[in-house]
Image (cartoon, rainbow, N blue to C red; front, side):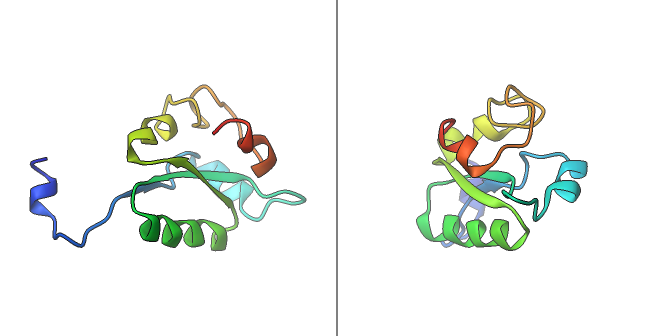
Length: 99
């Protein structure tokens, strides 16, 4: 709560762009035939939609894992992170059974 008190009231938090390593981000953008997934977590719908669009224009399929309380799942070592339990890139079809 200390940090949130320092932010303007209009500030919104979305956790994204951390589920893949740099090499995978470079190699997997615009993958064909199915795009690789980038997971994100957001409580704020509008902020989540903005980030989802950024993910899409970056060449990935955005998949929301839930609110910020679920962001631990997409941290390093989490069950939806490339360097965690997931251990690989996944397509949107594969991600559907994970979230």
